[in-house]
Length: 321
Image (cartoon, rainbow, N blue to C red; front, side):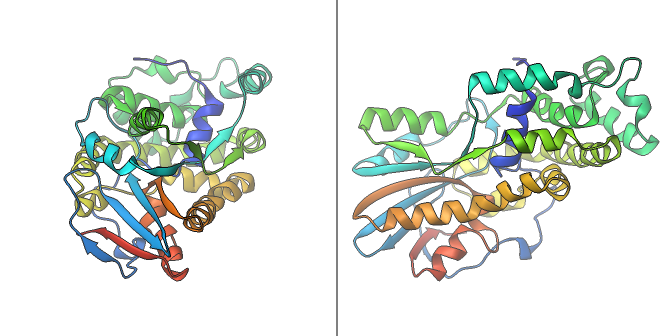
């Protein structure tokens, strides 16, 4: 299904989720992943979970991998059992923006997502980038007219949308299932934080065309790799195969490009791990059981959430690799 292009929300998704599409053709360097001392346990068949304990409190962490094939089969019963008796569910952060704010942003900045009259995208790209871009859009079964009047940044974001359309990917799961189960079991749920993104989005629009082309090149790299790796990563996630998930997973180069150029975005991105760690520690200060949902990037990478929790004397049991 083709959805209307909503640039601000697409930007917020790219910046805030830190849910980099599974995108590496080879396993990322070992230095990317943390190696905290974790008691390994064999979990029930299904997505991998980590069991955190401190005192008389426990928290189950469900790791996620970003966009997954729509209709992917996975063990939802096991997740439902984890929610039994839970006090709360911590969900990923989300951008803080209302309908009227978003509409006003599009009304006042809409022209900045299109090239000046008479200009078109592909002829404006350097030969190497143009060839890579054309090869990718053809792989996605898209025509030149789809991106003709896009700025490089809008085209960069549109590529992710078109990848999702081509591979029938969705970001609704597992969150839709979690919310449905939570309502049925009367377990409160909420994002760990809400991030203001309007200022960051405005700063992104101020990037000059040369900077935008660098980000487009990074997006082409992201999407081309994700084309081959998003589905295998999701299928491995569904059965708790963390080793294979890691082999197909990587951080977004587009996100790196934008954070390097826009301080407001970098500040938001850097808050992600810190906010997750603080929210989990706060949950572990309360007796009983809680559940958290977090992408495996910020969860498992060096300096990530699990490493910080280990330093805070939290006991961690995790899936065997």
